[in-house]
Amino acid sequence: MNSLLNELKINPEVYEKVIKAEEKLKNQYKEIDELAFINSMKIIDAFKKENISESVFVSTTGYGYNDLGREKIESVFANILGAEDALVRSQIISGTHALTVALFAFLRPNDTLLSITGLPYDTLHEVIGIKENASSLKSYNINYEQIDLINDDFDYEKIKDFLLKNPIKLIEIQRSKGYSTRKSITISKLEKVIKLIKETSPETIIMIDNCYCEFVETKSPLEVGADIIVGSLIKNLGGGIAQNGGYIAGRKDLVNLASERLNVPGEGKEVGPSLGQNRNILMGLYHAPSVVASSLKTAILTSKVLEEVGYEVEPKYNDERADIVQNIFFGSRDNLIKYCQGIQSASAIDNNAIPVPTAMPGYDDEIIMASGSFTQGSSIEISCDGPLREPFIAYQQGALTYEYGRLALMIAVSHLLNK
Image 1: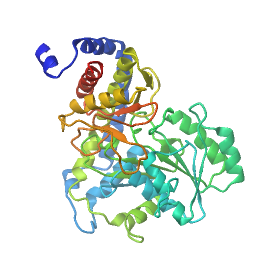
Image 2: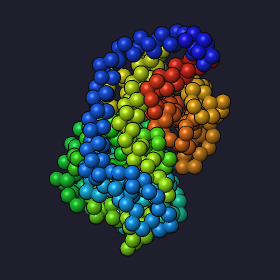
Image 3: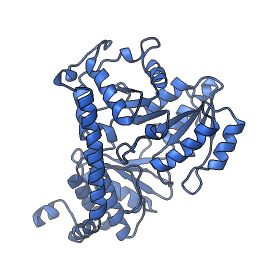
Image 4: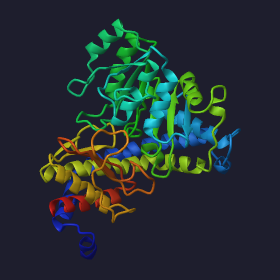
């Protein structure tokens, strides 16, 4: 043990601090294990209902007609997420792409998109037209309005008043915090605001950006009244095995519109080859509850340890959680960089690389990103990133197993403290 600690440059004091923190976290870990068990039951129930067999792994190419596996996968996802239908495709390259497909599918010229969780994630700015782009929603005369959160909750009065005075085609709710300092949105908060929206403007489409939030709670946003949810398969539901892809799930008519926007009007869900990804998508989903549990345990441990060594964290180790993201407020450019470099050095892939801040497509600020992952950009694997701007927050997420998560934390904190 001592030899390996020395080889991996883990400070013995940091190792002991992690061990002591884990003793205090047993009750939280037990709750996470129960959550993983409930979500695992959901998956086995869906697999049984759809009679998933080895034949589902057969791949299609070209147009992808009559892809039995693809159809079974979409039925499984719909069942687990509480949806009428689902679009689950490897042709969706990211969460931002899935959101873009959905927005362009549901909105028409002169419609209005309303965000009620403040400014959306950075990569959506050019999609919407907050930042000028000739291919944005704005360029198609689709309007954008925004209502900010107040004290990390919805501004219920302003939302109701706005809906009574304005025809709103679609409301977008981003559950995870993105690169902001607010709290992420729990299912209980979602349920309350969805009820208000449905009572005030029943025709308005409620679309949830569900990235990073799947299997963190026992309910899906669709089960509390949302019309459509969107996410990525290289986050929670891919379980670290799906190599790419995304999903759009909810009302059947909306899923059909999204499929025709992604593919071809008149063909929709009937086309799109699986290209050998069916097995990976199903196996990733099968592992997802356990992987999300490992990510949650790693986030809670990170929160506890980093707070003990003097940094502000959000959420606190004993807070209710809505996603797998852990914020660490470093207050210093150098400390943010150093911690991310520590996470990179603890990764399985490219652990000899040294991440540095750089410009990235879709972001105004330089970004530092540690992600030594088997799948490029896979946030469910241990990763840590953040924009180089005040207050210099690291956004850590993931861990395919808890063992690798706690090990990455030990190495990163040692790297930070030994600077």
